[in-house]
Structures are given as C-alpha cells and as structure tokens.
Amino acid sequence: MSILSYNGSAVIAMAGDHCAAIASDLRFGVNLQTVSMDFSKVQQLGPRIFVGFPGLVTDNQTVFQRLQFRKNVYELRENKSVKPQILTTMLANLLYERRFGPYFVEPVVAGIDQTTEKPYVASMDLIGCVMESDDFVVSGTCTEQMYGMCETLWEENMKPNQLFECISQCILNAVDRDCLSGWGARVYLIEPEQVSISDLKMRMD
Image 1 (cartoon, one colour):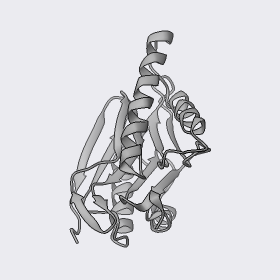
Image 2: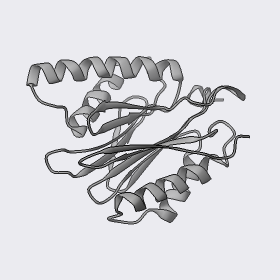
Image 3: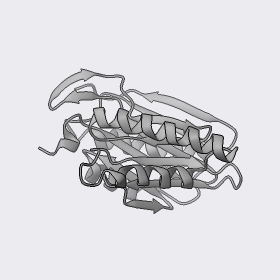
Image 4: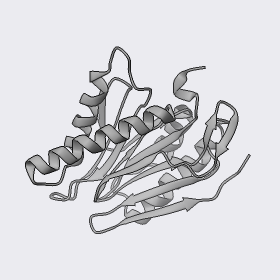
C-alpha cells in the first residue's frame, strides 16, 4: 500500500463562471480503521484561497503550517494579499525543496483572483510539479472515480448554484466506490463577494 493512501483522502476543485469550488471528504483513518469523521483536508489561506492537502495527515499539517508562514512573510514584505497563482508557486517551491525526502501530500489549490474575479484551480504532485486547469483537478485515493464523475458532469461557465450541485454529486458518487475515503463531505463554494461552506450527508459505511 502506498504511503499516500495510508490515511485515505479525496479532494476535488472545480472552476465555474466567476466562481470556484473545492470539496473534501471528512474521513480520517489509519489504513482500514476509521479514527475520525470530521476531518476536512481543506485549509483557508486567504480571503478567497483554499488549499486541499490529500495524503499523509502528518505531512498535511506540516506543509500547511510552513506554507502559512511563507504566505504571512510574503504579505508583510509586499504589503498586499497573496494571489492564488503566487501561493501555488510558493507551495510548489516548498515541496520541491524536499524532493529527495518528500512530503507525502499532493495538494490542490482553488481560489479567485480578487482583482480580475477569474477562478483558479491547480494541483501538483508530491515534489511540486504544478498542473493548472481551466475545468477541474482531483487528488486522493479515488482519483479514477473522481475523474470519471467530473468528466461526465462538468460544464463550462457554470453559475455558483450549478457548480455546487456538480461538485457535490462528483465527490459523493466517487467516494462511494472507495473504502479509504468518505464518511461525509465538505464543500467550499468561493465567490467574489462570499465563501459558502456546506457539509454533505452520505453513506457512513
């Protein structure tokens, strides 16, 4: 078993029309043993920027804390809020610095550029190779199922309520077919003027 699937995880990010969304399952487990059912892998790193950290939970927390430190230093030095693209580069550099002994996380970034109101989604591997996307990115232990659902349901220029419905259906149906993730999901809907956080009920087995 890969160390990336030791704790189980599922994260999806999607772009819409002047909106973005990121969703995560809520299970925290150790192999097949479930420890907690309220553990979101998504962290907020700006007013309209969220990062999902699927992978090993200990590295998830370490990378989040170090990224938060670098983001705070950047904002103090530059006297402006960090943009999603800059945060992604910062995170990629952090991961690549440890390429010979990597952190076992494959992060997903979702946000909105507050200047242009353009959505931004990106993912990367555990050594920081970035893949920016115009539609959706997935990461976790059920990527094949998530890709299938996203390719089926995603459409261009979805409004916030359509995007919420789409990403919710994708994560709920994908993690139903994975025994290492699931036990509920949390969706963060990012709009230029607000962020909505919703918990989804699902099968608990």
